[in-house]
Image 1 (cartoon, rainbow, N blue to C red):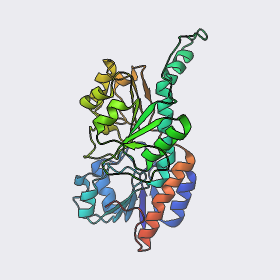
Image 2: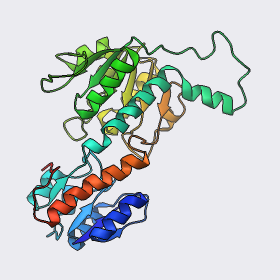
Image 3: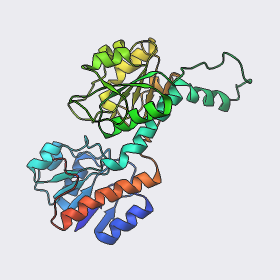
Image 4: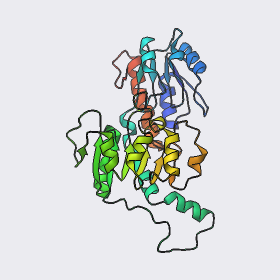
Length: 316
């Protein structure tokens, strides 16, 4: 089976994939264009895509040789799954492998943003720190605050668990379906508005895609209010970036912690210039063990496909 892997992987993952398949691993930093994606679909039996590859509807308009996109990652909004299904191409993802690492990054952003850690580090690196002062860089105490989780899937639950057990936070959550059987105290609210008006920290943990694009825009940020923080570890376009910049610049919310961006990898200069924003370069799963586990989870789907078995993580 001819396999295309669209980015470099960890050494362990590359060895495993190359040992099992006729594997071509691309050494590039940018994602495939629509035209490159279409050509890859014509040339390979299976592809392991990554975030940034543009498997849009247009890419599937030919007669693809490929029959499986074993996506490297839980999110797959860079793939038009309906167009893939119509073309006879299955799509899988790697859901469980990313959960704990992404939840860790959410807590990193909560703490860094609330305690002004990035601002403090920049101050020190510039050589402008003159020593400890009682009122220097006063931030927000996290312990005992209320966290609102937007999207109570695997990652949302992992974030909520850390907030409750680690920081004694009250947990609210908004989810489209009813969530039960949680192993920690949490209260599901009826609307996003209700969550935003009560949360000190609102954490976006919903899947990407058309249904959640600009879920957080000007009205939602107004409801969050001037003492509360927005954290986004989901997909960049879930938050309308222009509205967020406006809310931050006007003091409509207290701050934001972002690991993803609407026009990634481009980050708005306005965000870069703001001290009340913590910006990370999409580090959600950036641990060697996690990235290897993600590749191996994708490989499980590739092996199942090659052997004619049911795909464990099929999404279409």
